[in-house]
Image: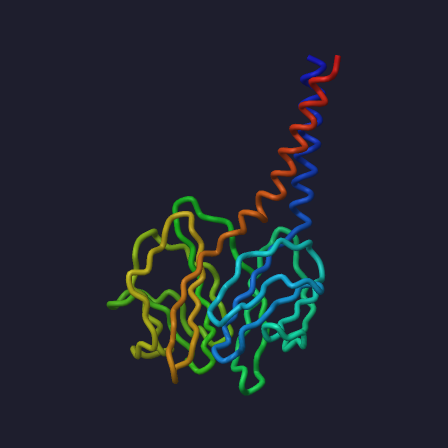
Length: 244
């Protein structure tokens, strides 16, 4: 009985320790959304975290300690940064740092968005991020006369996450206050317990794109913490088994 009490106590302490450890970490990914910017390398706190990130690429998440971090973006293979900023990340939160704006006019701007990685048991979650510099503000609606999901989404803005009934949808991005369809996406699947962001990117002069990307935590990020918990639990179990 004494051995069981000791075992449960130690396992409880280990679990609390891992929960506290998880609270010290956040996650961040990069979204390269500037249509005319070069391929970039991304440095976090002086370390090369992502190499050769091209336009319309949204990276996986990087696990970082909560707090202040220096993020630098430079043309691939070039150490001279075109973006050099300090950001502050909160524990147990996920972020997307997006590069927005035209490169040729010197308007390339980093913007930090908070992501929702918590799935809904019965619904799908979707948000929309306007990243096309020359596309007007839009209303997001269900095609074919369906309801408007979000009004007046302007460049550089993101909606909140909308809970949707799982299914397949035809969506329209209409110039705000009109029936003029600027961009559409057909047969778009929204699955239960899945969160995603639909990025509108590109240029009206060349090509506009509606790019859906799942908002899912990195498996390595999640499991690296809990694998540590399991290893500690195994050590504790072995230690208890040696008790007389």
